[in-house]
Image 1: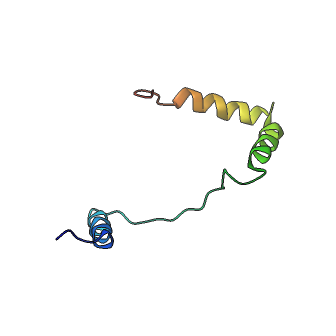
Image 2: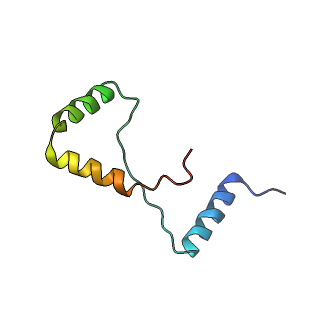
Image 3: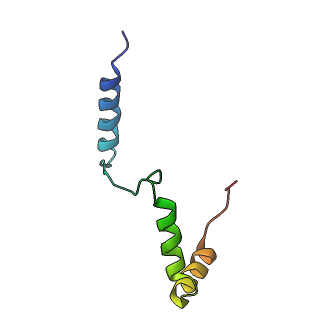
Length: 70
C-alpha cells in the first residue's frame, strides 16, 4: 500500500533535517497585487542616475555568473 501524501512529505522533511537543513518561511511581495508594477517603477525612478546605484549595478554585472544560463 502506498504511503499517504502527508507521510511522504513528513519523511522527505525528516531526511532534509537529518542532512542538516531546516525549513524557513519567508514573505515576499505579491507580484500579482494591484499597484505592484507601479511601485516597482516608482522605486526604480527614485534611484535612476544615482552614483551608488550605478556602482552597485556595475559590480553586479561584473560578478554575475551566467555560465549555463539559457
